[in-house]
Length: 115
Length: 115
Image (cartoon, each protein chain N blue to C red):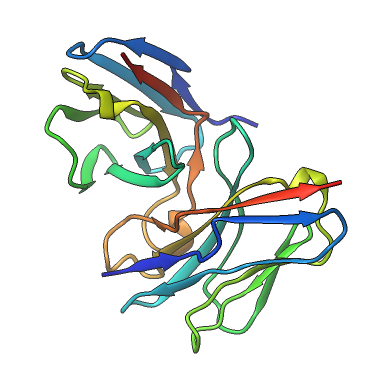
C-alpha cells in the first residue's frame, strides 16, 4: 500500500544553520506531496505542496523539490530560526483521487532549534 | 485565521461514558475529516465525508461514529470511551478530493482524557 517514510524523529540544530528533513514515499499512483508544520499546542498547517517533478516549490523560506525518480520530497531551509522549532509532517495524496480520498502522513520529524 | 472550529477544546471523562465532539467549517469546502493524533503525535485518519456522504472509514472501533448534517458540519460520537481513546481529535476540511483538492485545513483539536 501507499506509505510515507520520515527517517529522522528528532533533528536538533543551532540557529542559522541549514536543515534538510527527509521524506520518501511509495505509491502506485501519480503522487501529490505535502509538508505540514505543527507548532506546540497548535493545529497542523500546510507549509508547501507539489505534484510537479523536479520543480522547486517554496514558502516562508522553506523549499522542497519532488523527485519522482527517487520518490523523495525533502524539506530544506538555508538558515533555521528559533521559531522554526516544530513538528514537520510529510504527507502523500493521489494526484487524481483514484486511490481514495485521504492523505497518508509520515510519523513526523521534530525540529528543535537552539540559540 | 481560524476557519475550522471545534468544540470542546478539552474533555475529561471516565471509562464507559459517551462523548460527542463538534466541528464546523466556514471555508465552503466539500470534504471533512476526523483525524486522531495520539501521544506519539502520529496522525491517523478515522473518517472522511464528501458532501455528507461517508467516503473513508478506516478501521476504528465501532464505538466511534461520525455524524454529518450538512457539508459544513461533521461531528464525532464515542459511545463508551476506553482509556486508549485519550488523544487529540483533529477535524479538517479540504476543497474536494484528489491532488491539491486534498489540501487539509485543520481545526485546533479536541483533547480527550479518559480516566
